[in-house]
Image (cartoon, rainbow, N blue to C red; front, top):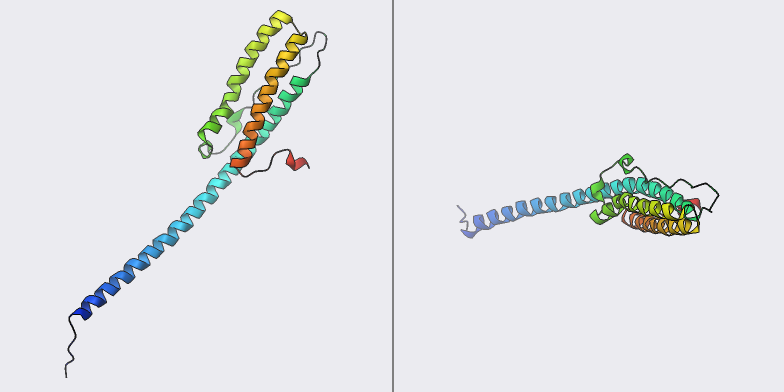
Length: 169
């Protein structure tokens, strides 16, 4: 005898097969996208840590030089050399992993230092190496110390790195 197959049976079977195929494709895409996102996040964090560590070391050294210069005593006929801005071109890595404002603050240090140098030169011409010059120099370079501290703190937070000074403890 021939069995009679209801008309809805092949349609239901085809729909079930389509749902299964689409569902497996969706799950494959979902898990693949999750793996790719984790890999991209890990690569971004690694690149930030690499770039941030280089920048933090350079900035910490510059900060210390500025701090020492701002505290250096007045000596007869001796003007201590002013700290040079770090050479950020030596920093290797993809700078685009950093926030644009943070990049601007880092690169702005050279501009701010140039402004301070012009002001110090004018004060030096007027007062020579007297207390007025040292006071102005101290104030200007303490501002650079504060800016370096702010940038280092922001890099530490963004790049998930400890403070460069915490490693000494």
